[in-house]
Length: 529
Image 1: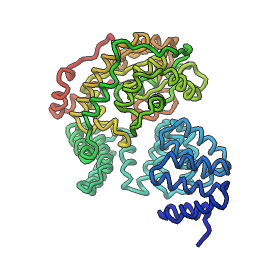
Image 2: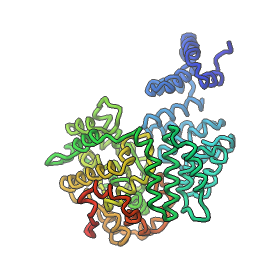
Image 3: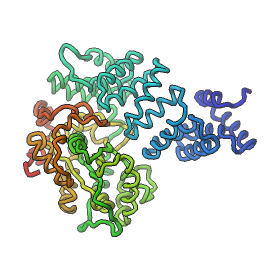
């Protein structure tokens, strides 16, 4: 039998020869406990079988015995990223980047780690290298395109998405991403090709493909002002995935109930931090959170860190609840009895690098609206800005958004009535936070008011954050920082009002949504917010 080497081991593992590689690796460890190779190969076996914590331990041991091997370091970073430990993954990726990366797969993997941790500018050279080394790999072009889109290089993104589809026309994610880059026109659209691709998989069980193509078709039809057809295609594209990932309202209700604040919400006794504080921007997705992030981060004293899971992960770690979910009722209930000062301190330490020497950092994770009370207890000087938007537009924009199916938190968006139900719970929780949190720590800001009176609302935001007026905040669309959200294209343009009242274009097709929202469907935004 061929002796076990790095390359033969990787090849055999790619062929699923787990049993033989495992036994030979154990034999190598017995022969020499300081041989890094068997630990690395055993780590891959553990990872492929879902034991990520064990894989991380084994990759760490391989690095210990051979720190200069890029395979060991890249796989270590990848595992941390998969575990959701993005700060640690970035630190591990930095160590890997110091080594000679001369394989396309390693370069692409390192780029993915940087991209997931929000460092798209660091990811780009590795994606470029991977594409140059293996130009026939569709996935490498797609990864390059996604990061190029996030940093605003839209032409590069377009070319890379097209290269992806030239190599693999059935790379459905690339279709939805490509269509999102620019407005489709009667003379320049891919509608017939998209129809054909959808028909090829309709009824065939490819829920993800139907979802991606359905969104691409829907977006095209909307651009062509064919709104009722657009909604029909959204419903059609989401159907199989909705049946697969039906939102559980009972679980959702338990979560909202567990989050509600007690009659008196006080910071943890030992929480004490300087005036240089984080700014949390929260709210339902697609309701203006990225817009406010761009306005504030255009100020020279503010840096946006993007959408961070850090606070939620720290709370989960502090509660030590056994569930597989970071955000669940059990975790919130247990957090009520904790002194969260240590969470606040850890948060400030972990995010320090992302601040880039500015006094303030923005954490724009929309779902942190669940954590507003815990944030105040852990970081009593933090500012929390909650975005609001008209109920009908909020629900429609959530339903229209193509969220990652990796997380169950967004499963409500597969069904209009579930989306309405979720909005009603959200609206009730916002009232609770407004009651329980100090007015100088929590404010609600209406998206429509920003659009119609940008300067007044910008001054209000800056005053709330104790920031001096800066004209750059009015020119947020000139902000060159990366945008890792669905708004990556829109927020690089000046304000526009076209999305306000968008729901009216769908006529009576949204009657079920109106009925599910009840009295909230008729709410109007207030200039007081």
